[in-house]
Length: 75
Image (cartoon, rainbow, N blue to C red; front, side, top):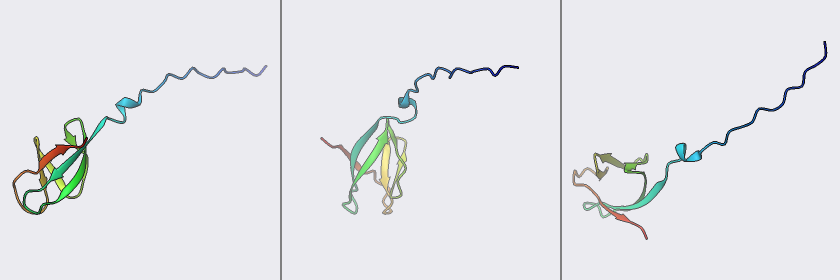
């Protein structure tokens, strides 16, 4: 029986925007301990960080105060 030659399948391009969401760089300022930190957001969600957390639309520092941080967009 003769060997058959298989042609490579045509690849469809992958849209990377589904895998890597656009990110925004935001500066957070804690009113208690006066900490400035650069945070990254994907849309309106805070990307994982050890010192900050997000509750709805507010961002909090882990210094113990339950007053939200002030957020500033960098230019």
